Amino acid sequence: MAKGTFPYQRVLLKLSGEALMGEREYGIDETTIRSFAEEISDVHDLGIEIAIVIGAGNIFRGVPAASSGMDRVTADYMGMLATVINGLALQDALEQLGVYTRVLSAISMQEVAEPYIRRRAVRHLEKGRVIIFVAGTGNPYFTTDTAASLRAMEIQADIIIKATKVDGVYDRDPLKYDDAVKYDELTYLHVLQKGLKVMDATAISLCMDNHLPILVFSLTKKGNIKKAVCGESIGTFVGRG
Image 1: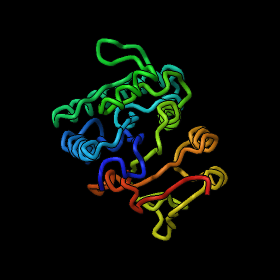
Image 2: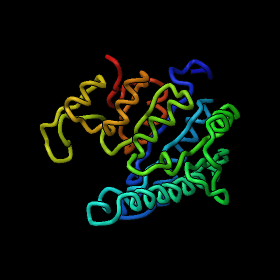
Image 3: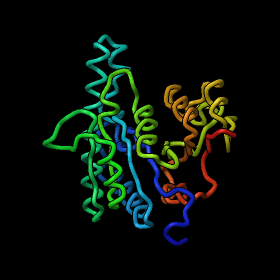
Image 4: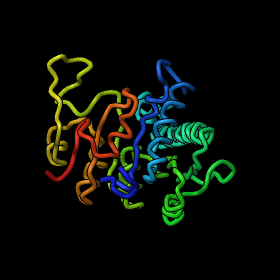
């Protein structure tokens, strides 16, 4: 497929922090993050513009900490800072492969990352750089799912591709229930009404209001990111129906 003929020219990849752990129970597995970087590099080589929002579940999660007694705002800011660590690690892995990368933070920390400015982000993409959005939206009470939806709309991405541990969206947890049923396609309203774990309700509502499709697929099978951006039939597609 030649450059310019792909169904999606600009994509936002949502990566969970937990995915970076590999087989570890905490932190970043170097082999795993290098594997992700190689897949992202392969997609970048196709001429597709890639932005990434990365979570922090491998280091710190604000909501569980708040439920244990910590101030919610403090806990959320700690989670935002943890996404910066993950973003810098992914940047390093990509640049070791020769992929020019920029980390853009919603919280000012100019020594390690550029401040998030929408026009600057778009310009980086136009110049062929991979951009990694960190620190969520910069505000407490908003998840990285919501940050992914917001940033995708701001940069006018064609789709959000969300990489998870399972191969799509199911009616119940497939890791716990053998009879779980996988959906190939869903509407935004179905996701909201059924409470399906695609992204949180705020993120889904933002996508619905702005007609931004979502593709949920497994990150455990090598080559799936490339298949996703090339429009192959994998995972679960969420759209207007």
